Length: 275
Length: 284
Image 1 (spheres, rainbow over the protein chains, first blue to last red):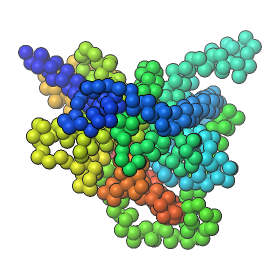
Image 2 (tube, rainbow over the protein chains, first blue to last red; image 1 turned 180 degrees about the horizontal axis):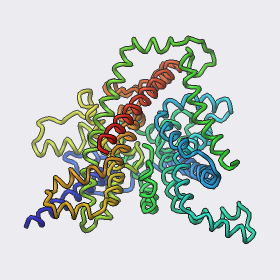
Image 3 (cartoon, one colour; image 1 turned 90 degrees about the vertical axis):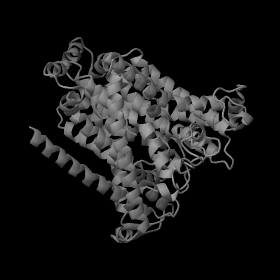
Image 4 (cartoon, one colour; image 1 turned 135 degrees about the horizontal axis):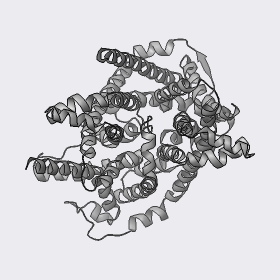
């Protein structure tokens, strides 16, 4: 009897947890599918009475949403590639060469967490202007990559450490150079770590607001968060349109997350994703 | 050795150099975009000490960081305990619960601004219907802006606590609980004397990271106040530093605010580590 009660309570609590996480997003979906008049209906309808894709059509046809979208994809993608390449090289050398760097890297990570982006973004802006890369995606990719690097080094190092050095030595005996040994033996084994790191990097780049706000001036170079905020800043907010935009930003982020989520927990214990 | 060079170059030039430059800037009187600059020594810091807005924004930051971290901690641990239990559909619910953390901040903000809209918002509609309130609550008005910001931030960031704690819960040896049960320990006693001590280290890290991140949080707060000044009611220190730099173009003043923010965090972190170690020793 008591056992059944506890079970029911646990189940109710679990359902409540799922509901609080998902219902706001379902409400966004519902609104995005409503024609303008129904958006403002009182009392609100929970399931659209006359579902339509009109908001999505208007979003893609009348606004620069698609441009923002591709900008975000390009910036986040390049950030992941750069961070992986530089991070994997760095983390590998942290593990394979005698190097009293463990403590240093750990401290560096904690320190970078304390440097609020607001502290870094002005100097980065001034630096970017000197290098002539203000208002380019290069500036964004470089900023995000260096922001993610301390954490990526830390996480990847843990994965490289778990790979027995004998495997590499065997490859050397077979005549493979260090480069090939890393490429064909170490990297494939460290794949879960690479994926976990790439999730964190991708999320940071995909979600960031402040760097884009400051480094990017031209409309055609803006990424999604800033572009969508501008949609939202219009005098009369077109909620149907804004919710449609919200849906289209959320879907890739969640799809990516669902696809790789089993790798996610790996990175979590070591300090997790900044945000 | 050479392989770590690219990483060091990037970190050095885009994190360490900017931080150093920000410290240098804080001693200058400099326009944010024009090159003219003038050395003022500790002038900016002295101005800040007498600046009412600074003290106000510092207080708002402390309130925001303390309230959100505290709530995230309590709710996150409770949720993790629930999700640690065995029930059907657990894997799915565990993934769903992470959604608020995985969606971009801009989405969390627009969704909640819509849910809390004073005229068409579904939250006020439900509250009215159930009869909890007589008139719609203006969530984004001056009176409730900080409350609603805290609520949204807790919604968005609690999953981080849930996942961190859940990961640790799964590694607690079951024998500990079996032994306690044999000794006749009640559920609360088991939580108090087994689960909590085992969670100590992870909670230490979670509180550290969450409070640092909430104290320096920019985008959620900025977007919640619709940018452009972010409403005086929620003008926390990062927002104030941003405004000084980009609204008043006082780069030196803004940099000094950022440096103070960093020093405060450093000091708080050191004290926090000290306290933790002292406790550790007391326990051991």
